[in-house]
Image (cartoon, rainbow, N blue to C red; front, top):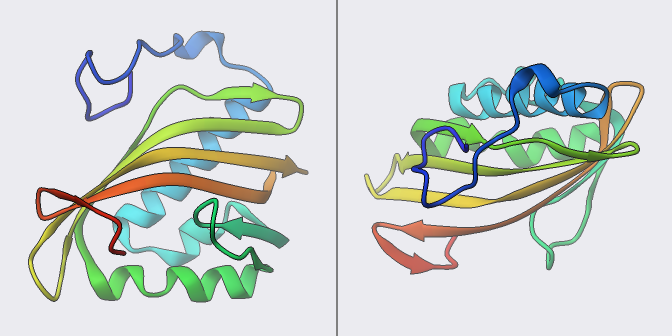
Length: 149
């Protein structure tokens, strides 16, 4: 079950003892990524990416290429988000790919407005690092549906 959500929102997760291979790697990478996001620790968040990784924020976004460009994207998080919680669901894997659902809730520092972002992350890996991350997600801002960042 997606930690932080109720039974009606997400199906039960696989028992942790069944995880292996790409499932175990995906769990380690998603947990490090999510913990870095929640703590505003960009070094921890970036530790999951390969140097030549590609990050695609939404299906309609231009790919961000290379770890330094991805780092620049995430540097705004500690400046604009507070009280961040990140939870993720079961890891699904095939070959070098894994995916999971996620929920990230935070307060905008400037306005105090709460944002609830939920979606899915799809990652390709090589040598234990993410070489491509695609995020498909939607946000609720201040208790209403909107596409504002």
